Length: 115
Length: 114
Image (tube, rainbow over all chains, first blue to last red; front, side):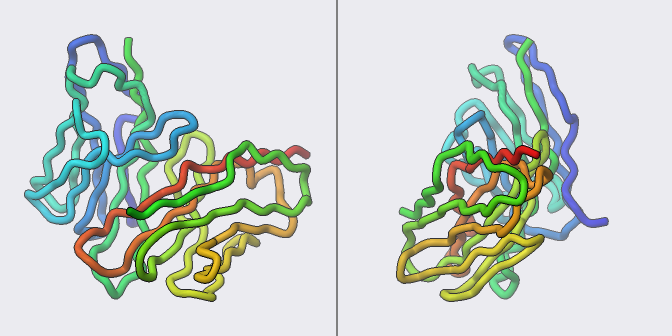
C-alpha cells in the first residue's frame, strides 16, 4: 500500500536535547511538508520541500531543521532552541503535477513530549 | 493573502441529526477546495474536494458545494453517526502558480452523542 509513515508514534525529549522525527513516503510525491498541531490552533507549517535538496521555511521554522536528501524522506529535527516543543507533528506529501488534483496525504503523526 | 474561516466548535449533535459546518474563504483566482477529517490521535485524511465553481464533492454521506459567489464550501451530512466524531478542516489550494502550499482553517470539532 502507498502511503506515509512517521516514526516514532511517541517521542520524549529531555532539556537541551535534539530529537529527530522520521517521515517516509512511497507515493512518488515531489512535495513534502511538516506541520505542528497544538490544541485549538489548527495546523501550522514548519518547513516544506518541493524537490530533493531544496526546502523552505514555513510560518514557524525557528527551532527546527530539516533535510531532503532523498525524494522519499523528509526528517524533521527539533533542536534545543525550540523552547516549547510539546505538540503533535504531522508530515504530509503531495504531487506538484498540475494535472493531478492537489490532495495532500498525511502521515499518522508523532506526539512529542518534554520530560 | 489566502485565508479560510471555519465555524468554531465544538459542534455537538445527537445521532441522526443534520450537520452543517460552515467554511468561507478569501483567495484570488480559482483555488481548489477541500475538506479533511482527523479522527482522534490520527493524521488528516481527505474527505472530499471540489476544483471549480458549482462542483459538489461528496463522500461517506458528506457533501460540500463550491460556491464562488459566496466564497463558501459548507460541509453537510443528512444524518450523523457517533463514528463521525472527529475534527474537520476546510482548506484551499491554488492549482497553478509556483506555490503548492495549502491554506487550512483552524478546524471544527464534531461530537456526536448516541
